[in-house]
Image (cartoon, rainbow, N blue to C red; front, side):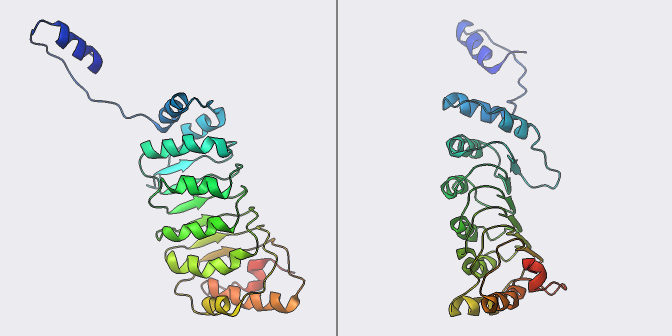
Length: 240
């Protein structure tokens, strides 16, 4: 069987003779091969940790996925990952947990993703700026961004996140350095008039506020984020 490039050579050199060939079509490159090609074109060293992760990128749920958890990714790897996203099928499941990525890295990645259903960005270096970027994905269903230094601004962003992502069912914000529970009146009003609520919310192991009055106020508001499933502000916050 002739390869496509060999067929062209035979046709050119065949003095107009008729050429018969069996053509099976082109084989689609795997994500691993696309990554290796991108590294070669961009003169970037291939990470063995990324190769191993891509070898196991199989998902039986039906979602196209890119799972690069604990792949030792840093900012200089993002251009190659973006190039990979341009050449693989559109992903709806993204796992970049356990790396060393910052807000600007995630912003670059999101430029190449049109829709997201499930996202895990836990254990990186992200702030609340990344939370605000998810409002462009109304089909988002689960989000884990735990163990990131999100900070206090996160609380003010949650009502908008829920309103813009009506399918969001699970949100994990464990250990995100949320310290100050004092909310301005407009934000408290937004908490009290949510159009959508979560099935599951994890806000545990965030430092408790020294202001017990504001903490008690926040415990009552946080219950508005979750559907009535027997949980309460005390359990969600894991406060003693």
